[in-house]
Length: 589
Image 1 (cartoon, one colour):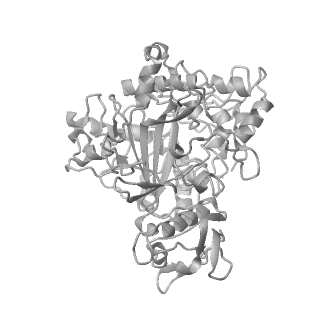
Image 2: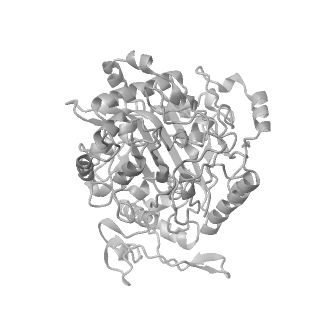
């Protein structure tokens, strides 16, 4: 049984995995002293945001999210278990297998203090000062593109403000937004000239709890495979090659057969996609994996049972790229916009807003094999046993992003006090790292590609939410790998619609006075997940206003969860002997 990695991948482990370390600091006391000496006003903006720091100055354990401080047992002794959605019995190549954290607290002296103090603020007065008309006007403004369709943040980064230029070399060395959010009928993003950007949007079942729109935000996710995966063997961009490679990656991540968007001639690719022993017409990518062999004479891995196509297939043979179940190719990218909630014209339901709260970016910069990933987990367990109070070392900065220690770099942009997107500083980005590394629920650092809709859905699963007027309406409930209804399971185990048990709307709709599920409402949700996931229009407006207060304050490091009243079911301080109170963990995949 593995433990969670929330308390970190050590520098030794990160180095062993081949992650670049230059220009980075550890999170020990000396690093804080050094930061105090080195910080200059040139890297602090008008809101007091420090972009120079490569350490967290308020919360050195910001990777332990606010949701982790939930009290599982309520005042009546009833047990609530939202923990199973993240801390689960994982499968390789995720070796964390941290289901025991549903039962056992794993907090040290430092992490027992909840530094997300925004949770305990009463924002009633501030929210009351914002009118419905004002907040609707605000969320309907596009803070990503200007009137000419140009990406505003990209233009600004091309002439990077000195306050953001951490290494002071006069240029931006991190990700520059290059998605136009202009999608064709296959979900491919196109730039202003109609050219493919490589980004492709997909529909998916929203992950449990926090990212349900009823809890404050709408969002989307896009994927982009490396350039070689978009090209035929001659090195020319080819949409069909790209579509097939995306299906192959989906089969590897889901570890199941994936239907192709349309039948293809395998002779065009020289790959037996359906693994029937001949090159003919294939309608699906068959997942059938046999461990490849290592040729000691050539020093190469060969005899792959599954292969990419096009130029990526050639580079697989040369081992420039590798392939394995549960792992993305090196240089795979994800883009995730988190947005406000808009209201439709009839004022009857919600939809995705134009305004972004955040733009999150991730790229896989290193390929780590199964043994490397397993060794990293084992090494971390040993280190934590030896140094239980040692906090996690997360390497990076606000310009180049933060490293997970398992091959990925994550970077984020968030609203400034004027509502325009700016880089997240180190501590604000650290908040994202905990969930994308070191928990059992992720597949190679990510959450939702394994939850992607397949070809039975709108546009065969490849679309942006803005392209389907129905949104999540009419979509049936997802099922777990052992056949259970997933959202029902969350409601049954948590007895609430969010980790904090602060969503009164879901509580009143889905539970009776005794805390038992309302089967009539559950059946409606079973056929239409929006019945659970969508807030009322009035709740959506209030949540928008509550978050706008945080934007005005620029107080993200103290918590970015939208709420009006103080959250009650959360620890401010966890006792040294405190247990979760959960006696039986949930088996969940």
